[in-house]
Image 1 (cartoon, each protein chain N blue to C red):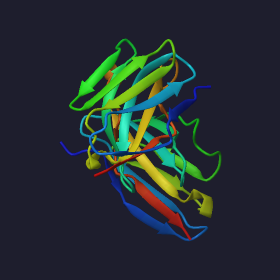
Image 2: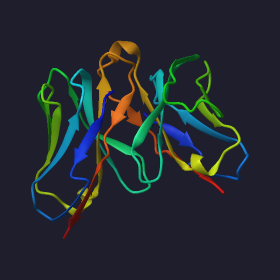
Image 3: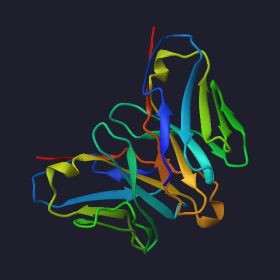
Image 4: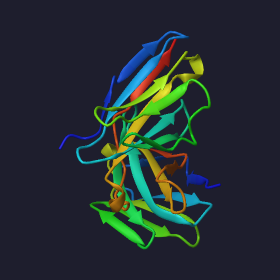
Length: 116
Length: 113
């Protein structure tokens, strides 16, 4: 059973470009979470999604950031018109369906975004 | 607003020592608490998960305890080894909100031979 997969592992973008980060949850997991770790800071929650639904986006910046988890395919975190302050490690986590809330979240290896 | 704090921020010890890492949280209404390790430039590895109804969990040389009423958890590492060097993070899941995790600030551990 493959773990949570994220790609790319490293992404370099110039200011103003778009960044697309992908996350494939563990098999059988229907909940996806995105977290951001800024340099020398702790992990901060961004958004929580289930298939085709955004459940909690309270940690998402108001502009330029969006996330989706379509019926088919990976979850995507999209950052439009990137700025230097977006440089960070972005982690995706997944967990089993709602009936198993006691289960832990499993994290992917992260995507390290560098904005030049 | 839930805040999670970890003490100490950094720790450097010789191999073989028994260690205690501390995690405190301001709101005791948590669903569970999870301990992770993070190696430099890498992702998070889950170490232990303690449900709110539990008082401790053990895995190998690791033991985590939870005192919900006082808002504290400790991670005990027995007979530390250089391979234990990493950053240790605790995270709480709130019981009255979504399933997001609130992370602590981390303890950077170095175990030298």
